Structures are given as C-alpha cells and as structure tokens.
Image (cartoon, rainbow, N blue to C red; front, side, top):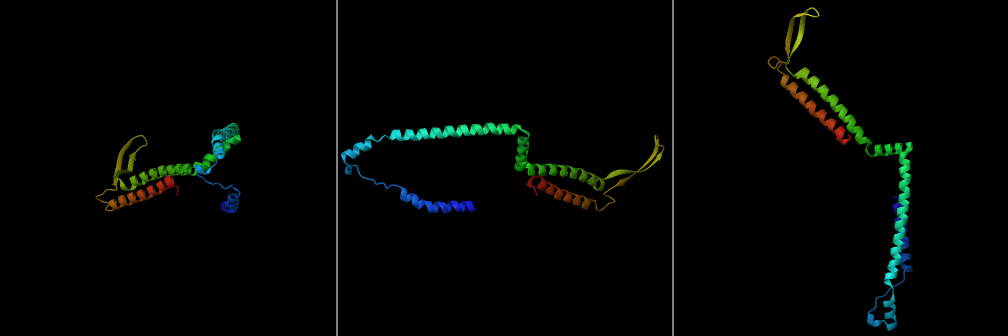
Length: 184
C-alpha cells in the first residue's frame, strides 16, 4: 500500500515537469508554409525513423529471448536437484495441499462413518434372528434357540428409531461433505 501511494505521489510530482520539458507543437495549414518548408517536410524519411524503432524492438526481443533461455536452463538444472524437488513439493503443497488434506481426511472419515452407520443401523433397526442358546458339543450342535429382535409387532418405537438414524445419517453426511469439499 505504501509503495502504491509513493508511486502515485511521484507521478503527481513529475508529470508537470515532464509536460514543461516537452517541446510545443503547432498545426498549420499547408498554404501557410513556405516552399522550402514544404520540400523539407516531404524529404523527411518516415521509413528511416520507423526502421530505427523496428531495430530497437528486434534488439529488445533478442535480449529477452536470451535472458529467458538462460533462466530456463538454470531452472531446469535446479529442478533436477534434491533442493529443486523439495521446492517443487513445497510449492505444490502451498497451492493445493489443504485441498488434498481435506479430500483425504473427508474421504477417510466418510468411509468410517458409513461402516459405523451400517453396523448401528443393522443392530438397532433391522428385524433379524439372534442366536440366544446353543446346546451340544463343540463339533456337534443339537439344539439352537433364536430370538427375533427389532420386531415391528413387539417394538413400537421402531419407526422413530429408523427416522432418528436417517436424520443422524443426513446430518453427519452433510458435515462430511463440508469437510471434504468446502474445507470447513
């Protein structure tokens, strides 16, 4: 900010002096010029002046080309070194590191959440048979007793439990999306 203000102040101070240093120009009708002035104007070599500027532009272009090719060679040499590899890693991390971390952690926690949610939903909301007693030896089982859990006929709050699980699923999924894609 200070640099910008200093540049503006310098321009405001130096513009009037530059305007005073310029030579004044006038526009005249051709009829007001003498024959000598007319021939002098006709003989002015506009092409010669433009050739000078063209040569100057070519020289500037060559200088820029040589400077950039030297810079390119040095950058290539540096990028092949260990310090160059580390520098490229730091630059890449600075550009997209936070996004990659959010995507990695968000994906990991979303996968863990889906596994946990599936387990808890199965345990609390799905009607299933559970083995409660087994008689017999280790290799021969004679009698197995099962009990039905989460039966809608006996468990009246099963619908509210399923709704609560669905609500928790949506809320946590939105949090995971925010962590993964928005970087919250």
